[in-house]
Image (cartoon, rainbow, N blue to C red):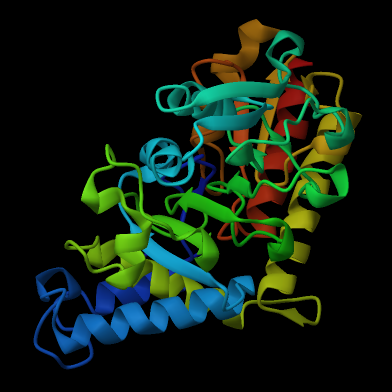
Length: 375
C-alpha cells in the first residue's frame, strides 16, 4: 500500500485527492464492512447497515460544518449542474431570480435558471476576466425575487467570497442560494445568511456522484409542476434522502471524510477551525511564492483570492507545457494535474482539505527551481 511519503501530490480541481487514512480504511473494508459480510457497494440502501452509515454521515457533517437544526441536509445526485435546474424548479414560484455572476460557474447557473425564470445578473464581471468581486452594496438587487444566487468559490477562475453578503442588511428579503461546491467544509459559513446551499462532493468531500443540499426547512415547499419528483427537495427531505436509491458508496466515503475532518488537528485547533487554518496557511504559502516570482503570476485581485483553487500563469507562455511535464516527473514525488482549465489555459493548483502543507511546499520548491533554470 502506498504511503504519504511516496504518493504524488494531486492538485486536481475535482475529482480530487482524498485523505490517505480514508482511502486506507475504505480499502480495508472493501469486501467486508465491519463484519457484515458485505462491502458497502453490495448493501441494500434500505438495510440496517447502510441506514447506520447514512445516519452517522449526516450527524458528522452537521457537527463538522456547524449546520443548524433548521436546515435539512439532503444527499442527492446529479452534481451542481443538475442543482442549477432543481433549485429554480423548487424555489422560483414567482419566476424571478437574481444571480451574481462572478465566474464561469455562476454564469452557468444564470443560464440554467433562465430556462425556468426571469433572471437578472445583478453583477457580471466577465468583461473584466472574472478577476474581482464588486461589493454587494453595489449590486442591482430586486426586492421581489424568489432568491439570490451566488457561487462562493469559483473553481475555474480562482475568486472566492471572503464573507457571504448579508442580504437583509442590503434591504433584500429573498433567501440567499450558495453554490459552495469547491469550498464547503474548507471554512466556516454564516448559516444565518443562507437559505439554501449546495455542492458536488468531488472536491472536498468524496468521489463524484454525490451532491449535498443544505436547505432551510421553511423553504421546503411543493416544487413547480414541471419538476421531476426525484428533484423535489420537499419530497427528498420527507423521505430522508431515500426517495430513490442514493449514491451509497459515495455517501460511505463522504462519511469517512467527515469523521476524519472532525478529528483533524492543526496548530492547536481541531475540526473545521483546524481545516480552515490549514487551508489559510497553504494558500498563503503559494500566493507568496507567486507574488515573489518573476516568471509565475496570479491575476486575481488579492482581496478575493481563493484558498481552494489558485490559477497561475507563466509570463513566458511557451514554457507552460514544459513546466507541467517536468512537474509531473518531479522528485522525490510527482506534482500531478496542475494544468489549468481548458477555458483559461495556464496552470491551476487546487488546495482542498486533503492536500497537505508539504504538498504545497513541494510545489513551491519546484516552481522556484524551475524559475532558476528557465527564468
